[in-house]
Structures are given as C-alpha cells and as structure tokens.
Image (cartoon, rainbow, N blue to C red; front, side):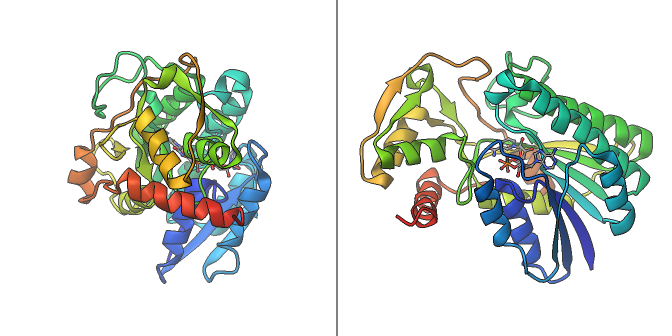
Length: 323
Ligand SMILES: NC(=O)c1ccc[n+]([C@@H]2O[C@H](COP(=O)([O-])OP(=O)(O)OC[C@H]3O[C@@H](n4cnc5c(N)ncnc54)[C@H](O)[C@@H]3O)[C@@H](O)[C@H]2O)c1
C-alpha cells in the first residue's frame, strides 16, 4: 500500500489526479485544500463529492500556508509521495492580488518543502507552469531554455518554486520534479479559463473577450493526458547528485485562438458575440510545448485532439448545469 498526499485536491487538476489514483487498489490518497473563493466554492465542493466516500480517500480542509497544521499532517501520515497542486493560479489575477500568490505559492510552497525535508518522502512532484517561458523564449519551448524573464508575477512564483525545489534536492537529497502544465482543459475545469468562459458566454449570449485581436496561440492539453503524465512521473523518481527534474507536459500542438473559438461555437451550436481587445499585461502570444524529455522519461506524451477534448468538455458543462 502506498500513501499519496495530493494538495489542491478540490481543484480542477487535483480532483482528476485523486480520481485516477483511487482507481488503483493499492493506493491511499489524502487530499487537502483550503477551499478558497478565488472561484465558485460550490464547484470545489461538487468536485470533492466525486471523491468522498471512496475507499482509500481522506480529505482535510487545510491551508498549506499553515505550518503547524502541515507539520502535524506529515508527522501523522508518513506519506510516500506528494503531488503538490495547491496554488494561487491565474496569470491575470496576479496583477491584482500578488499577496495571494506570495501566501500560497511562496510561503505555502516553503512549507511543503520543509514538511518533505523533516518527514521524508520518495518524491515530491509539483505543478510548474508553461508561463515560466516569458520574454525571449523561442518555440517550441524546451526545458533547457532559460526561463528568467517572467512577464507575470504568477510566472515568477512558479519559476521560484523550481529553484526552491532544486535547492532542497541539493541540500537534503529530496527528489523533486516540476511539471510545467500547458493550458489544461476538460470536465470539472476552471471557470476563470477560456474554455469555460467562452462556453458559458456563448450559451448565455454574452460577448466573449478576444485578446490581442485573436492573434494568439495556445497549446491546449486535455485533463486525462495531464493526469496520466502526473501519475507516471510520480513513479519516475529522479536520482543522481541533484535529484531534481523539470518536464513540459503539453499537447505539442498550438491552436489559433480564432480556430478555438470556431470549434467552441460549433460544439455549442451558436455563434459567439466577440469583443476584440488588445493584448493583456502578463500574457504571452503563444505557448507550445516541446515534450521529448517527458516521452523519453516515461514513454508518454499528451495526444488528445482539441476537437474530441472540447466535445467532452462541452458535454460535461451542459450536464453540470442541467442544460
Ligand atoms: N489549469 C491549468 O491550465 C494550469 C496550467 C499551468 C499550471 N497550473 C497549476 O496547476 C495547479 C493546479 O491547477 P488547477 O487548474 O487545478 O487550479 P485550481 O485553482 O482549480 O486548483 C488549485 C486548488 O488549490 C487550492 N488552494 C489554493 N491555495 C491554497 C492554499 N494556500 N492551501 C490549500 N489549498 C489551496 C484551491 O482552493 C484550489 O482548489 C496549480 O498549481 C496551477 O498553478 C495549472
């Protein structure tokens, strides 16, 4: 039996990772989340309801920035693996409320590292982000490119996490891996991201905001592919003098924003009312993952087509909203 801590278990990716782990009979999952109101708390509760009561699952409402609570949890549970997904997410919100990012992504992350140091685990896998490729990165983004010119505070905290983790890997021989996720979408997704925002607005006849006048590309990655990667990487523990690794996990197939909107319109059966706007501060015009490092390590890279992934998302969206 192995015991895995999943932080951010009520979140989009956290719920899906717990769901996958619980499908294995030899895994116990402890989920934690502070259930904050960055977006609808009822969605977080609804996600948790899909996990609670299942054999091998336990949930604690807890803030990763609360060191005494974290220490107590690690001391009591003796985790084998930690999958750390709790964070203040969102590029744009980091321009409005940087303190939320400092609290969860810097202080909270320090607590995760300290807990793993004092109550050793086999592997700490945590959520990085494609946003660390800021100014000066060339596409496709590969992990060996420099990532020292972030264009948002969110990206800066995510890059900081990688450097903080590398220091713990060096100092305390703690195996750590950062997974740089590329625009994740799918059932139980996030209401602050384009797939949800556009689908919702199209169904309600409200205008959608098309930034940079539509001249953007995103490497949209389906949730099941992300989860498959997370679970495989968990079991692929880095070794050597510095047991620290970084992998991109993206679809390796950037899509034009206007093509994405057309697809969403087709799936919703309605045309979107479009408001064209300039580029937003903190945004990048393109994301595009080079994924050969991940494939070499774990024999897998995301491959779900946007057409089939979005069809599943829109179907889920309708049923969640009773449409
Ligand atoms: N979804 C994406 O496209 C994407 C892309 C790149 C990186 N990421 C990263 O992946 C991780 C998961 O993202 P997501 O899309 O599931 O986001 P999410 O917001 O749905 O999930 C994060 C969860 O963490 C919880 N949380 C936040 N701060 C906390 C704290 N201090 N203590 C305890 N719980 C806390 C939230 O309540 C939320 O349920 C995040 O680290 C995010 O930055 C996501």
